[in-house]
Image (tube, rainbow, N blue to C red; front, side, top):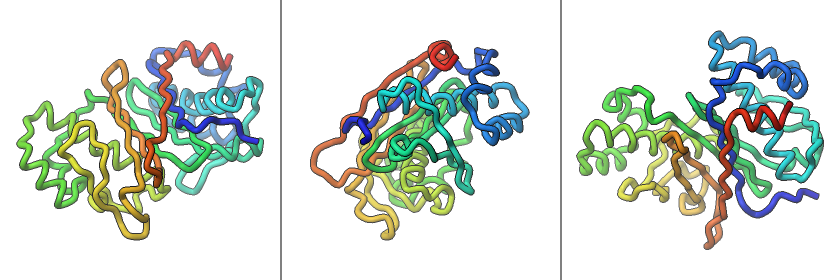
Length: 249
């Protein structure tokens, strides 16, 4: 029986690019297809983030299930999303991975699939050029009404973008649904209310959204399917890369 609690567990790991000694834990824990995929990354930082994310899901699942010696077998979907194939108790737990410059994250829940997305607030984006491909018409009206300046505009845009990415991950639709087909209420900060989504995905009110910042300022968004009246609790854990590496050594 799965022993994961009712809360969604989110673990964030900072500074993965600063460490070089990922080889030993990768060889000990990652499967052949994961090592092959990691080796395709040209940049060292990208390899480090991939290694950290795939070690993190093993550490987080083992901790949640109370199995310190848990050995996981993973596979991936056609879209490259990893999932647990063995043992069965771990396969019952949904997880969502995300990584960006300076931060790797994993969200776990045994009740239903959740979605996690994060972005570095220092990312260079031409926000104005992206609005039409990310915002719905209703969101665009709210955006223009707010009259955001350049700095706040980037922060607000990342909040919206990561929420839509988290929602698409929770639904498992990837890029098959365009971002402008979801519509959020942008009049609050943090954003927590979904106003509309395609009919095939049900009632927009049956979703809970959480947003926070990492200690380094990354925008972190979480999408949780929740048709009930009470909010699902979320437990946040933050680790340094050296702590994850020590745990997996």
